[in-house]
Length: 376
Image 1: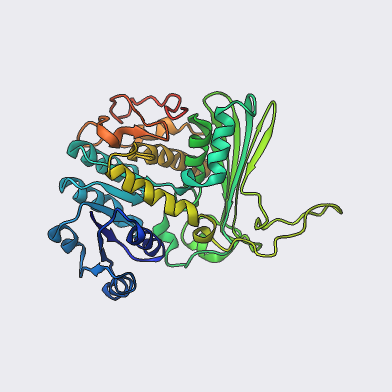
Image 2: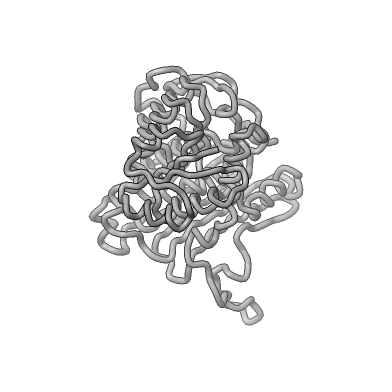
C-alpha cells in the first residue's frame, strides 16, 4: 500500500512517521508547499518526496492523508474523491459550511471514504469516559464541564486563517462531547474575551471563550477555552451523574495547583502542547485509518461527524456576535444546500465506534438533527 501525505508540518511529520513505521504501509509519497521541508522529512524516513500535489495523483497512491493548512482541505478532499481515493484529513473539512457541504457531496457522489482527524476519540481518557457513560456507571448524566487551554498564543499571522477559537480549538470539545455522551447539542450560548494580546482583536478573534450547551436529553454542559494558559497545556472533561463523577485529563502532568493545605502538589512536568499530550491518540487514529483501508473496521469518524461539530462551532460564533442563544440546526438555513444529495454509502457512512450507518438524508435547510447514532 502506498499513501500520499500532503503537508509535512508538525502534524504531517507525526502522521508520516506513524505511517512509515506501519507494517501494512509499503511506502509514502510526501509533498508540501515548502518542497525542501518535504524532501528533508522524506530523507529522514526513507520515503519519496514529490515536488507538488500533482505528482501525488499522477504517480499513483492508494490513499491520501491531508495535513495542510485548513484553507486547502476541501479542495484536496474533492480532488481525492474524484480520483476515487480514500482520505484521512485533519479537522476541519473547511472553515465555512458551504465548503464543508460541497466537499461532503463530492465524497458521497464518488462513494469514497473520508475519515476526519478528531484524535480525542482515540485517547484512553476520553474512551474511558465514554464507557462510563454507556455502562450507566454514572447514572443519569446531568452535568459536563470541559476545557481546552493552550499555554501560549499561536503566531499572529496565523490567527486570521484559523477560523477563530470556536472553529479551531473548541471544535474538538464539541466533537468529544457528542462522542462521549452519545447525545446531540441542541442549544448554545457563547461568549468570549479579547482582553489579552492585541493580535486577537486585530484578527477579530477572542483569546478566551466559554459556551453553555444543552444536550437533547437535558444534560447541561459548560465548555471553556483559552490560548493564554501560562501554567501549561490543560485539556479536561468532567462528567457528573446521579451516581458517580469521572474526569478526563487529570494526571501527574496536569498543570493544576491546589490551594488546599492537603491538596496535591503542582505538576513537575506539565504538558507542553497537544502533540505531546495526545501523542498516543494521534498514532491510534492513523492505525485506525489503515485498518479502515483494509476493511477491518468501520469508519471511526466520518465527514458527517465533522459537519455536526462545525455546526456547533458556527452556532457558538453566531451566539458570541449576537449575544443570544442559538440552535445549531438553524445554521443550515443560512446557506444553500450542496450541489448533490448526501447519502450514506459504504464505510464513509459509518458513525462513531459502533459503526452503524446513518440513514439517507439531505443536509439542506430542513435537516433535523436528532439524537446521535453513536451511542452503541
